[in-house]
Length: 118
Image (cartoon, rainbow, N blue to C red; front, side):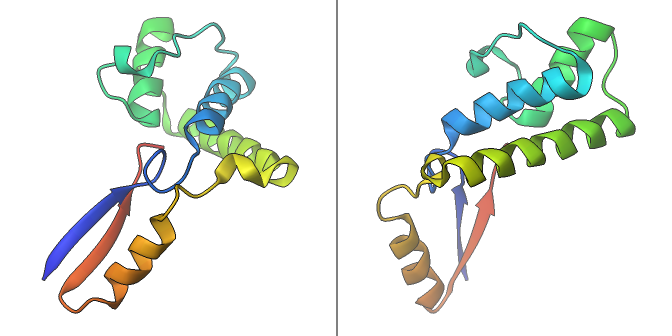
């Protein structure tokens, strides 16, 4: 069996912009963290959780606890849903992504997995 793994943001969907907006807003809404560096490649681990952990260490000298993670995730999901309801075009497919996924799932000997740093 062969496995192909696709990232979501920027590979299957054009969601990098809305993800960044919602990430920043969720930190502000859930934890009053504002004025963060949004040049994501400056962070050691370029995933939402990796960036959040780094920001928490910088601001508070510790990683976020479980309750803080839940609060952030809940806020992020609500913001993403709100943006989806206002303008679903912010979540557009990368041209050809669904065709590629469909074809791969129909091929014998191939498995498909999705990954995201969000």
